[in-house]
Length: 345
Ligand SMILES: Nc1ncnc2c1ncn2[C@@H]1O[C@H](COP(=O)(O)OP(=O)(O)OP(=O)(O)O)[C@@H](O)[C@H]1O
Ligand SMILES: [Mg+2]
Image 1 (tube, rainbow, N blue to C red):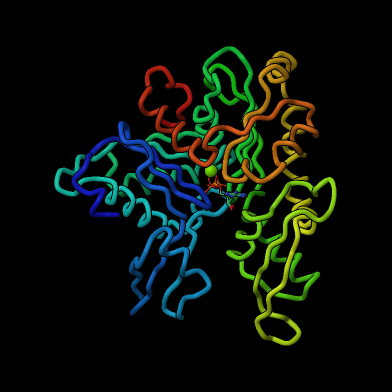
Image 2 (cartoon, protein in one colour):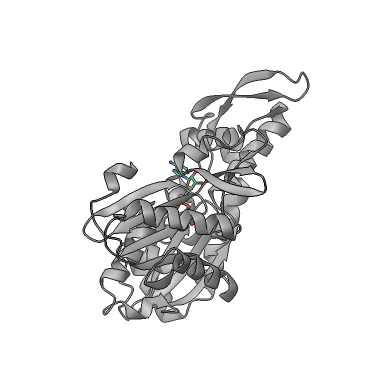
């Protein structure tokens, strides 16, 4: 992939640094990189060296020998391991740009709405250390809303719910700003953990997070089927009684019940934001509804559950996993018109 990208272009870029996935958009080229936010690091003689980034590194999670670590440098959408995140950003910028004619690019990076000044500075510094000429930050909810095509600059309220791997961001936007937002550390990863806990508790079998994610993608749902047990999935894990590997079958009803807690937290957060929304803006949202973005937007029945809880129309955005990076990219492309949406420029 590196060789395919090298020598092609050298332009400004948008980076959506997510807990689960990192995406890079380049003007005129679209999304040029979409990989899991995982870095495999080899430690030897007190020094760390990056072995792999992205999909290749994700395959190594839970399978590494002692001197190799497969790490997720982002947690709850913010940089948890600065040195590794910096290396990852450098790696991305290098991979995306033509080494020969490296012009230091303008870079826009997404940050969670709830992030602190210190956390934002660390993102900015990582991009600067990667030789970006100018670094802009944009709040994830704003980027997702733009990416979902909401009219964020108009004098009209819109609402976006972005459910990612680490966080759920709920925001009401108007006149190019976030009027009110809430963020909770509940997203796809928390759901994976809930599935691991369920299988362990009920079946006495330990499965890995990656297996849990597979189950979620295959038969996960935000609520149980109206009738019957729904779809089934076979999974393998280690039997905690006998200690040996074992296969077992789980069904949609069981998985939906294990996801009830995270789904409930997300629903409550959306309701809290609606309660804090001024009547005029709330009236606009009644008309236009809620736009759902992020990877968990495609979880079966997620939109239905939110619709039932709020009484509002809920629409899953086109390409919900790309909304953040596409919206950030548009903010960079149309910096004049969308100036107010960028923070700390
Ligand atoms: N078909 C699917 N069904 C359920 N969940 C899915 C599906 N596809 C992706 N996901 C989940 O979406 C999550 C990743 O979403 P996304 O890429 O939006 O997160 P992120 O932007 O990296 O995280 P954050 O915004 O929290 O930092 C993962 O937990 C993944 O398992
Ligand atoms: Mg995200």
